[in-house]
Length: 409
Ligand SMILES: NC(=O)c1ccc[n+]([C@@H]2O[C@H](COP(=O)([O-])OP(=O)(O)OC[C@H]3O[C@@H](n4cnc5c(N)ncnc54)[C@H](O)[C@@H]3O)[C@@H](O)[C@H]2O)c1
Image 1 (spheres, helix red, strand yellow):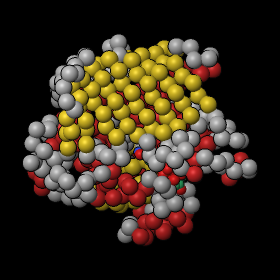
Image 2 (cartoon, helix red, strand yellow):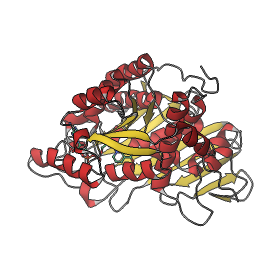
Image 3 (cartoon, helix red, strand yellow):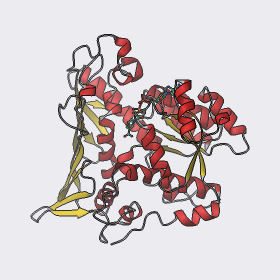
Image 4 (tube, protein in one colour):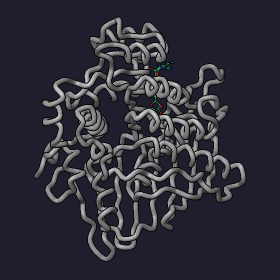
C-alpha cells in the first residue's frame, strides 16, 4: 500500500516559504460550486483566500469575505478593479479562481491575465468558440498559467485509467462511451416567468446548446483525456423535453475520433431519478475499462477472454499518476473534494516551481487547460450545427496541436 501524494509538495512549500494568495470571482455563499473550491483549495494548505468579488450581490460578497476572514479592503465591487488593484498591491493575489456563470469567464480571465495573474477557471471555458480561441491566444501571449477545472480528472482511478490506455493495456482504442445524465427535481421544471429561470436554461448564457458545455462536456472531456484523442466529426440529436424550456435538456452525441475510434456521449437534465449519473466505458482490442463517478474508488478492467479485475485506489500495483493523487489508505473513501484538491495541488506546485525558476511543466501535465476548453467549444458548435441538419455528420473545427510538456522551456 502506498500513499505518495504529490511528493514534491513539501520541498516546494518549504522553499517558497508562504501560501499562494488566491482570489475568487464568483463562488460566494450564494453559489453552488464555491464551497467545493474553497474546501479543495485548503486540503493541502497551499492557498490562502485573500481577495474577491465573491458575488454579484455586494452584501453576499461581503458576507462571504467576512466568514472566511478576508480583509474588507480586499473585497471589490468589480472584477476589473480587483485585477488592477491586486496587481498593484505589494502582496497581491498570485492566482484567481473564476466561478461565475460561463458568459463571464472570458472577460474575467482577460482582466486577470492582462494584469499578470494566473487563472483557475471553471468549465465551460467560454460562451463560444471564438471567445475560446481568443482566450487560448491570450494565455500564451500573456505567459500566465491557466487551469480549467474539469474536476473529475483529479480522481486517482481516472488518472490510472489514462495510464492504462497510454501503456497499451487496452490495445488499440475502438470505442469510448460516456454519460452525465442528471435527473433531480431542480432541473425538471421551468418557471412560467422567464425572469425566474436559472441562467443554465436561458439561451442568452451560452446559446441553445448550453447543456453540451454545462453537462456533457465532463463526460466528453473524460473520454478525450483518457484516450488522448479528440473527436474530429460529430452527429447530434438535441431535444428540449421540459415545457417552456428554451434550451436543449437532452443531448445524444456520436463521435468519430482522429485515430479511428468511435464514441458516444449522453448528456441530460431529464434522466428522472438519476443523481449525478457520470460514468465512462472504454474498449480497446484487448479489453475494456469501466468507471462510475458515484463509486470513484473502483476501476474495472476486463481483458478479452479473462476475468474482470476490480482495481481499487491506494494499492501498490497502480501507476505513479494514481499514487501521486492519493492521500488516504485503501478503504477510506476519498471522493469529490479530494479529487478537486488534486487539481489545486498540481496547479500550486506549477505556480510555485515557476516562481522559483524550477521546472514546472511536469505539474501541468495532468491538468486540463485552454486546449481542452477549446475542444469543448468546437464540439458544441459542430453538435448544434449537426442537430439543425437532422444529425448529419459535421467536422469539428481543427485546433492547434498540444504542446509537449515532457520538454521544459
Ligand atoms: N466542475 C464542476 O463540477 C462544476 C459544478 C458546478 C458548477 N460548475 C461551473 O461553475 C460555474 C459556476 O456555477 P455555479 O453552479 O456555482 O453557479 P451559481 O449561479 O450557483 O453561482 C455563480 C456565482 O457567481 C456570482 N456572480 C455572478 N455574476 C458575477 C459578477 N459579475 N461578479 C462576481 N460574481 C458574480 C454569483 O453571485 C454566484 O456567487 C459555471 O461555469 C458552472 O458550469 C462546475
